[in-house]
Length: 225
Image (cartoon, rainbow, N blue to C red; front, side, top):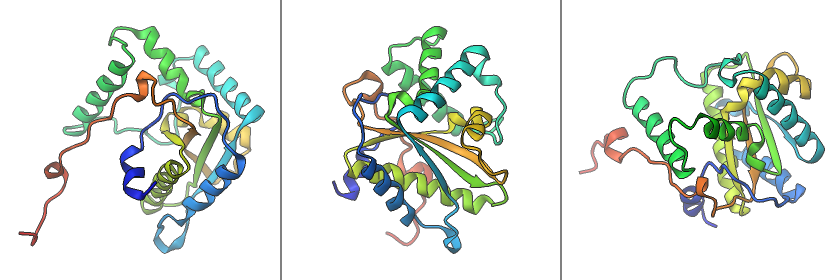
């Protein structure tokens, strides 16, 4: 698969097949993504990979927590989204929600159905491999951007192995559970989780392509005429 196809075929996979991933492939993927660019070559990423029984246990703890407390009330170390969003961002977020739950056939008032899908976040959507990525809390916005580049590199290299991924900021709501599980050193904070596996491309939740802004909405060209 070439780079163009990898970019075009990448999705946030929300339903994975019950099919294991070769551990050596996981290692190569995580190592290969480290070629991502970083200012000053700081490489500000730390990765915790798990499968098998450890993965089952972290999912068990997370699901138990979400069933006992409203998921929206869990404390996070950083905001996943701005407290107040203006356009065009608010519209983009709303449209994505409509696309996602529309693919699932879930009406806006179907709170039970939506909760089940939210809960699947904390099961890594049945992915056989889960990653947690952390960053040193003393680093700045530039390093956060670099870590985002590493996440992107992971998702694209995964396509090269025929795998799918789902980066999941949702896990920051359980940073205390994740931090205690791995015994994070105090300087590290959870940035996101990521499910990795073979996506079920026939499942309805993976059937839609999330919309993207038109080129003229985010880019201005000078000297190209």
